[in-house]
Length: 332
Image (cartoon, rainbow, N blue to C red):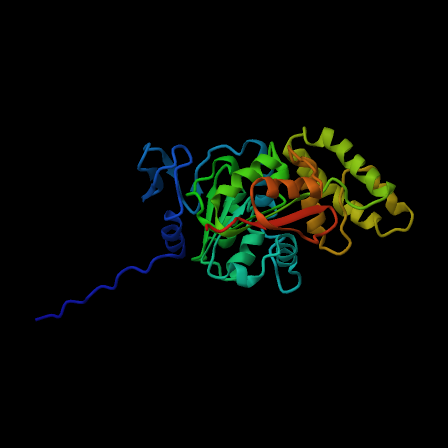
């Protein structure tokens, strides 16, 4: 008799492991019903709405006001990922959310507006049980390319105002540099609150109304606003062409005394302490984005207070940012 070989069960892929964990958190953004996984799709058991999935769970079909970010992060998909030479994403995550590794390890974490995954990368490496990144734009494809092979990362394309999750699903929810690019930063903040567990942490970082005190910085912001009245209406291809062509030129000019100040007459951003690609990326980001708002610390602090959060802390973030975190009260 020939002994029959016993086949081993298939080993789950990292993506399927993350999906299995995420299914317990998902809810239909239309009716709030349970969501089940089928080959190539997700189906609501309540209203029968069907959503496609590949490496990304897709709950929207159009990027709307966030379309430029899809172009941006697919073009510069790895520029801001941390490396041995530069760990700016980890620095900013700590500084602008106050989240230490021990607050993320073993937790269910949601990033609202994940882009290509620069901060989600840090959260994943910190040992989150599941790090879920959501973005309205096609940047989710870049995030999935960068992080989709990790068993504790799940990427979803969804609207922040209609998130596809159960209420109180996450231990930590944070958003860095995103809410001010929505139609209403305050309403976007309010949309995040219900998804934080009692006792959980919510942290956001948005553009500040002022960068530094003084006339030169006020003039610089006025210059930026003036240029944006034109550039944000241009096709994204034009803005991308300009960033790639002009920034390297002004990068050189900026090193010439006196002459360097000519760059302030043009829509470019030049960073002396970062690689050239960061200046190209942020020039496109600044001048191509459709929507932008700026906020004062008291205003953002008020959002947290009126939402009923406690332990509210105004963080010592970089110039030009307002970063606040708070805690959803634990149930009595």
